[in-house]
Amino acid sequence: MQVHVLLYDAGKDSEGIHSLELSGKTVVLMFENLDDALRYAGLLEAQDFPVPSVEVIDRMEIEEFCIQAGYEVRFVESGFVPKTDEDRLLLSPPVSNKDVSNWDKQSYDNLNNENVDQADLDSKNLEDIKKRLEGLL
Image (tube, rainbow, N blue to C red):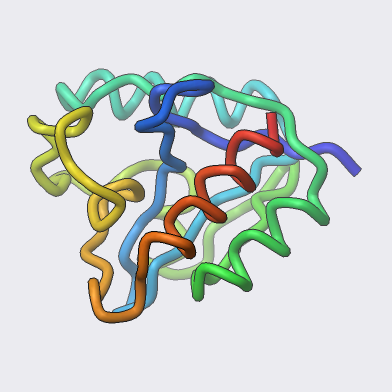
């Protein structure tokens, strides 16, 4: 099954996937509906956040990537109706975002707009993750 995800700098060395921090976990969104993904990207732009591109990726690939990276993945199906405040963040980004003004100059710890413990990442792992992201395209 194909899903839609939000990528920054798609195809570049600084490529990253949009994520949220929910309840202390890094969460990557997968949208079933292209229009939902495009609307979410537009809402990010309206908040003066860098505009991600919407990319189609195989659901199994993105889930595998998230598992290996230690991220949680949330599937936003067509017609999704939020039931909680946290669910609402799956359809509309939070009011405030982390600073990504140095996006293209920062290392992997900011690749997904989240802080990653550098002790967990050696250069081999970093290269492997970059290759996996490139392979998703």
